[in-house]
Every structure is written in C-alpha cells, then in structure tokens.
Image (cartoon, helix red, strand yellow):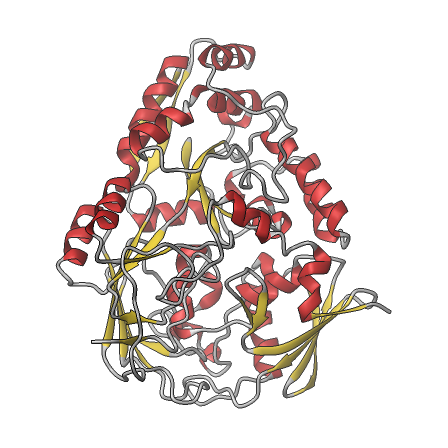
Length: 536
C-alpha cells in the first residue's frame, strides 16, 4: 500500500514544476520589503507593531457578481472576492507548494484511491456553526450538485470523526488533491439550507464577511469577529470598487482614492506610468502559479465555419502576434503559442509552431470551402476593443470579416460560462504546471468556462483522461506535451482554443503603508488579508 504525505505529494506527482515556470516568467522567488514576491518601485517597510483598524480600499476591474454562493464563482477573477470571506482546505506558498489552510494534514493512498484530510480544530463559520467533517461533506455535495469538475472525481466522502474525513476517488487522478484542496471554498451548512441567502451575502470561515453589495459596482466586507486566527484580522473592513475604465481607475488611485489597484498587461501605458512614478509598491506573482494567457477562442460547437479545424488554423496563421505585442503592449508581453510558458514542464517545443502567414491562412480557408471568406463576430470588453480592432483588420486581409461586438463584463462572463457566444471571444486561460487540472477546467465537457462553446474531439478527450489518471510524473508530462501538440500544432492541431496572443501578467500596485496583504504571492489571483494592516 502506497501512501503519500502532503509534503511529498506534489513532488511525486510532478506538480512542483513551478521552478521551470518561474524561470520562464523572468522572475525570481525573492521577496520585497513589502513581504511579497515581485519588483518594487518603493519599499513597504513595517515599523513597530501592527495597527488595528482602518479600511483597505481596492480598485478592481473584474465583475462583482453573486459573491456568496461559492460554486457559482468560477475563474481566477472571483478568487480575490472569495478569499476575503471563504477559505479552502489548502493554499500555496510563495514557491507554489501546497500548504495547510483549513486542513492541517492530508494522506493520499494511491492503492485505495483515497485522500484522508485532517481538519483544523477550533474553526467556526461566521454564523457560529462549526467547521468540521460534516461541513466538508456538505460542501463537496453542493459543488457536485452544481456539476463542478473540481469535485467530479470524488465518489464518496466518509466521515471518520469531526476532524477527519476520507474522500474516495472514483478513479486515479493526480489532479484531484489540488483540485479539491484549493478550488472548493467552504460555506456554512446552515446557510446552505437556504442557498438564496448567499446571493448577496457570505457565510464562510474567512477574515471578512460581505456587509454591503451592489452587483457590478462595489462590495464592502467587514471584520469577522469569529475568525479562527487569534487577534486577526487587523482591518475593520475592505472595500472593493469595480472601475472598468483604466484611465479613470489610474487617476483615482494616484489621487489616493484607493490604497491598492489591480492592473492588467492590457494597460501598458498605465503600467509604465505607475512604475515611473517611483512611489508605489508593485506586486507580481513570481512562482508561475495562476498566471494567465490571453487569446481568441472560436465557438466550434455552433455549426458554421469555426466548426472546421482548417478555419481555426487559418485564424492562427492570420494574426501577427509580434506586431500586436509591439503596438499595444510596448513589447512587454511574454509570448507563447500553447497552454504553457516556454521552458516550463508542459511546454512542447517540438510541435510545429504557428507563424504569421496570411497566404497560408487564405489557402486553408479555400481548402475548407471559404475561398470568398465569411463574416463573423469578435466579442470583447471595452478595454480590449482597440487591440481587437487591429486583429480584425488582420483577419479581414485573409477573408475573415469581423464585426466587433462590445459587451459589459457580466455579459462576457456569462458567454464564457454558457458557451453561447457567436464567432470569436477573448480566451483567458490559467497557466500552471498541472495541465490536466487547469486545461481540464475548459476542455472537459462539464468545464466551468468555455467548455460548452467548443468541440470535444475523441483524441483530445482521451489524452485528457490519460493525463488525469497518470500517477507517474514523467509519463504525465509526456502525455501533456502530446495534448499540447494535438491542440496547438500548426499542421494538424485542432486549435480548439484558437490563437494564444500572449501571457497576460497582471500586477497589483499599492501605497507603501499597506502591509502584509500578500497579493499575488502564492497564486496570481490570491491574497491573504487576515494579517494586513495600514501603517498610517
């Protein structure tokens, strides 16, 4: 019988390949004076004892919607909201290793196909209900009722006692530990008796709980007096304001209307402006966990041109990604052509790479029966419209005529979830060493995002299944590279996810009086504000 402890599981599964990704991302694992990995324009140095009280104000650009019922919260953007009020069994450290959170230990039995969790004692939900094995079982069942892929491989939860629960796996799956450990956020079982009570409220074990909320406008979180970490949190409240217009957000941040400001690579001018000011602390993820690529994904599930792989390959040949990087990102973006960063454990450098070749694109369109071209849509949010207009011009040159369909963030998010976009839309893909877990969230037929808008060819689905079942790290990486080739090879790839444009590395800027927020340190979309305080 083979058992693997929490300390050795990731190494045995080959998931600790973040060191390779780290190098590929051009960063180091060193910490700044602010206590987080990344580069700084100024140093946030804590002096004296932490000060209690105050409100942390964050300016953010991702939609705020239904923040309380966690199974509905899919995608990395939601994690900033989730981790204020809710916690998972595990988290990550700055090197990308899984570490205890609501669970203190775990034991993986690869013969029995089980994970036995030791739960943290003395933890209560915000409503006073105990966090225990029964609460874990109830939440797993809730996620399964919502068809979340993270819990699909859990066949049964066996309660041993209040602080121990065994999860039986339906089949071998090297991603299940991380999937269940990090991506399930625990709600009070009492609140789950009436799930609608969580439409505009929260009830978790986290340091703050939602007290005021307006859909796609703002969310205010106040101190959880029942929080299990003694003496924490220090802050009285956290205010998250949605500001989608980047220049407005930047101006307000520089006027100190906000203490922290999340900026994506799509705004390189603002990045340079904030870096050049020399007065802000910049926090970037350095371990490669949760970094994101941005691309254009066609809806291949709808009958039409995009249902043909040759048309999807034509799309990839028609876009000059280097020109896009130079024109709109000031050459700051890291480039990739698959679901991985060059140099990482799952990057396949042996496949045929796409190059900018309009004539090849025209030839493929003619071969597919579209010599005269066709008209389609590009769905976009406002901040990306200029770049996508330039891409539309490139596509127009080969005969793919695009109408720009600008939508708000909530509509864009809904298209991702239900797969009903027509034509092309932005594809946000989380990059991390476990391809079976992260690509699986989109490629799986029951995936959280995009899955309903793409085809699911037998070859790709079989490879995904083999990757998930593989318990040998070397063999797993070999299969992952085969899956990369099956989808992204320029000669015969299915191009299910269209064209990857670049790695979209976001940054968190803050004033130097914000201490111990740990933004982006463990995972791009994560922070731990339980010990955060304001040195002012």
